[in-house]
Image 1: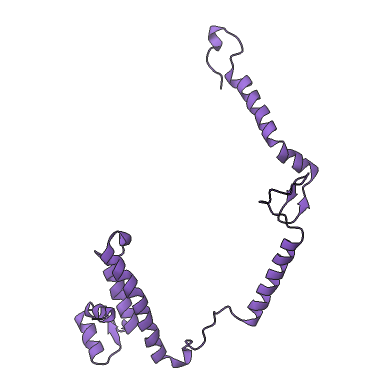
Image 2: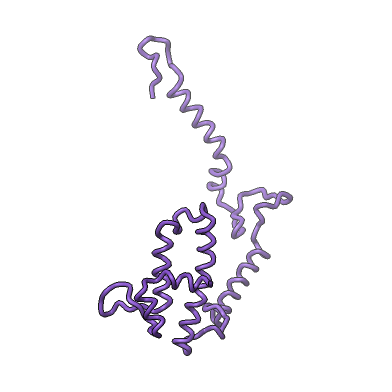
Length: 188
C-alpha cells in the first residue's frame, strides 16, 4: 500500500467518497466556499496528523514518526505537482528546468560582481591569514587602505593603555590609602 493511499485512508469518509465519485474537491468544514483541492485536503489532514500525538513534536526522538515524515513529504509534493500539471498545463514549468533567477540580466549582474571581487583579490586585497608577509603599518585588509596615524596609534596601543587604566583603578579604588580604622573598608 502506497503512502498516498495510506494518507487517503486518513481522510474523513465524506471526503473520500467525494473523491471516489470523481469530485476533486472536498469539504473539511461547513460553508458554501470551503471546498479544497485534493492536494490541499491531503496536506491539511496530514498536518493535523503530524501535529497530533506521534506528530512532529519530538520528531527526531521517535524513529517511526521520522520515517513517516521523510516518506510522506516528498511523495505528497510529487502528487501535488502532478495534480497541478494536469489541471493547469499552460502553467506547467516542468519542461523549463532553469532557476527563476537564471535570466540574462541576472547572469550579467553576477558576472560584473565576480569581476569586481576578482579584481579586488588580485589587486590590493591582503590575506589576513598569511603568516609570511607582515606590514609595518595598520592596513584595512579588505580594501588595502592604510589607517590614519591616530587610529593606528589608538588600536596598536590599546593593550598598554588598558594596563595603565587597570593599574590606576586598582591604586585609586582598591588599595587602602592609610591605616586608620575609619578607612579600612574598600571605597568603591
